[in-house]
Length: 183
Image (cartoon, one colour):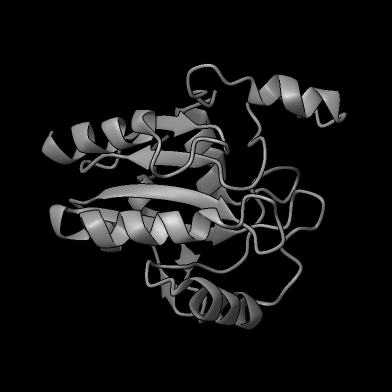
């Protein structure tokens, strides 16, 4: 892991070249998002979290991905329009990428190397529920579904990972964010 997570090339949803270095010194919550998923309403909670905590140094970074049952089929332009018109999203959104498989984006490869297992919220069995539907990850460390979350601290270290059903206002996620913000 010689290259910093801050240096991995990315593109904003409008095509502008960037990287996470734009958020150096901030706490970043990286989320793979989708517009046609049962968890899509998390966009509203992510925007509220961003608005509530951005002045304290939190950035929510949305990465559309079409890896799960083709639940993000739109173009970057369509995704941007959907997010702003339906949920008023103002947090940074990035171009659609792949979070798993042979075309996995280098950012997600790095995030998973740093945190190979998602933390489940108490009394939840997300993996077990997925297995009942035959949704077993090819690799144990793979992103499980849309809206999985990775938390990066102010120094660029990936410090935590949360299952998709850990919504932005869950205590376990809020506590981890608070700890990262005060560190």
